[in-house]
Image (cartoon, helix red, strand yellow):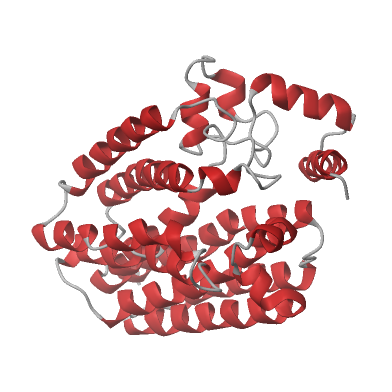
Length: 340
């Protein structure tokens, strides 16, 4: 399909997914005028409210696509909630707030770093060529300074925790640094992304207890499987372009077997979460939340259509709500159990 035709088709499908009906020619023109990134939600916070001068940096930090920091945050919040179950008390709200802030700024810093390294690749992929660096909205030097500013905010957050957690948090930096390079070396870079995005599962527990145990380790490993699943769905948007330019991904690796592969890794995630919940002393409410989480993932698998970019994006974004289901069950269990 010609490049322009593909862009128009993707834009049209994306609007249909979001519940808007617009003429594709108008949609593309508007996106170019506003500098909107191709896979950003329509009428997002950045495009609606921020001053024009700040928008490119907000897009660089992915504030127009908040699903990323939700996915980074969930393993940490699950772990804090699970620690509350183990301790027989509600989760620490201060820890939840810190981990939310940390997830937002460190996801932004990581994406900025990724975009600096991938600027040449992004310029050759239809979905990513509109990002701030390849589109010329932000210079590389300015992006580096912006990345450091976000990292300093993340450092301020980490320093609020106990010494063990501070050291543990710094352990993720090596993995974060390696991830953008993984797509050039291995066939499943989503595994490395899982190592990085799931690290909060260790941090959330240690923030409460100042140490680790089997339960948070199982949440960590389970979150890696979950990440492989949802990011394989996401990667199907770029499968054709990735094949042309030689970028590796699990979407290309699994290809026509992607539905089965995603189902297997999602099943592994749910199994490990169940073991972690049991080890932490979780009760009926915790397992009900996990069951709802499992049903949500199963629904993603049954509806997965790898050749439909808009459907893949919609399924990927729905993991925000999947995270709420498991978290709500853990919180309910930690609040109700002590009263019984």
